[in-house]
Structures are given as structure tokens and as C-alpha cells.
Amino acid sequence: GWRIPFLLSFLLVIVGLWVRRSLPETPEYQQFEEHHQHKRPFRELWKTNTKGLAVVFFVAIGYNALSYIFKTFSLAYLTQFKGVSASVTSLSVTLASLVAIFSVPLFGYLCDRFSSKKVLIVGGVLSALFAYPFMQLLGTGHSVPIYVALIIGTGLLAPMMFAPQGSFLSRQFAVQSRSTGVGSAREIGTAIAGGIAPLWALSMVARSASHDTKGVALILTCSGILVAFAACFDQGYRFNRHKN
Image (cartoon, rainbow, N blue to C red; front, side, top):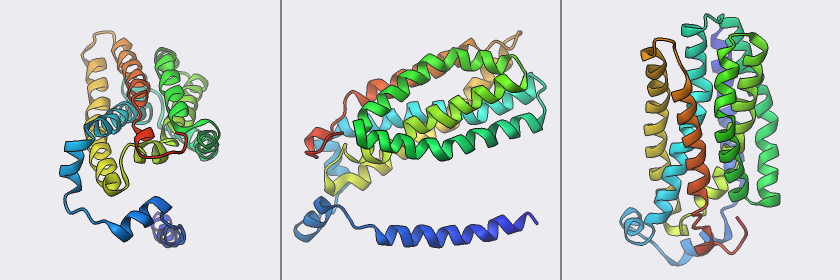
């Protein structure tokens, strides 16, 4: 029975390929492809746009630290240190995921309405403000506060920072180096923060005699501030005439 969802996921791959092939390339890319070819885009990036690389890298660091603490550290913390049952943690993730299904397109719409930069900054600031309440809600060990914490963190705040990234990150680079710039800076930042942040947070709690979580809240706060601060140095105005 468990194999059925995996087999059905093959249909999603086909749908994804069909959707991607149906989408046209941007006019800027089509125009550039007709007249130019760059063989060393990464070298060109380091020479001409280190600021763009830094913006994407630090946004990825901050976002993934927040996201992975919200959705992975929290579950380990609840089961190991609060004795919360697997049914409660599983339901909390399910509820948060259901909310995210609707919140991601909503924040995407807000990006088009107000700009991806503004939505990303607001998401970082709100995540920083929610850091200590998030840990306090988890610390109760009761189901309802846990549901509230995960729904806000994973279902609302993480999508608020995720939805703008497709537009915001790509705008940091010129057409000829866009894929290289976003791919390298984002994936390096994701690997660092996604791997280190939840393990670091869990080790801080484990080393504390009282399993104190103030250090974890501080990591969340700093990560949210980092996202907002990095987004303020948006380089999109250099490469795109449209608002960001």
C-alpha cells in the first residue's frame, strides 16, 4: 500500500515537465540567447556581481535556518524533551502543510501586488518577532499550542519567505549568469544552514541541564533579521526595470 503514492508521484513528474515546457522564456533571456554566449558565467559573476551572490547566499542562510528549525528541530525537540506523542507532531505537520498550500499562492499574489522584496523583508521581520513565542508555545508540551506554533511557523512565516524567492533571487543577476548565480549561492547557503542550524539548536537544548530554548530562539531571531537585512541590499534594479 505504501508504494502506491510513490507510483502516483510519477504523474506529478509528467505534469511538472508539461507545465515547464508550456512556459515561455522571458523576453530578456530570448533576446540575449540570440546574440550572446558566455562560456564562463561563474568567473564573470565573481568579477562583476559579488553583491548579488552575497544577497542570495545570506537570504538562503537565514531562510533555511528558520525553515529547518521550524519543521525539523521542533519535532525532535517535542518528542525527545517534551514527551509529545508522534500523533500530535504528525498532525501538527499535516495542519501546517494544509495551510501552506493556500498561503504560498497568497504570498505570491502579494509579491506581484507589492513586490517580492517587501514581502521577503516583512517575512524575515515577523519570523524574528515570532522566535520567542514559537519556543514558548512548543515548551508547553500541549497539543493546541503546538498546532498554533507549527501552523504559524511552517504554514505562514516560512511560505512568506519562500514565495518571493523565485522572483527576488533571480533578479539579483544579469540574464547571462542568472542560473549560475542563483544555483550556486542558494544551494551553498541551503546546505550550510539546513544541515547545521537544526543540529546546532538540538545540541544547545541537550547540553542545557534544564533543556532551555533561549539559545534556539536567538538563532531564529538572528536568522529572521539576516533575511530582512540581506533583502535590503537588493541588486534587482541593476538588471530589471520592473519593480521588485
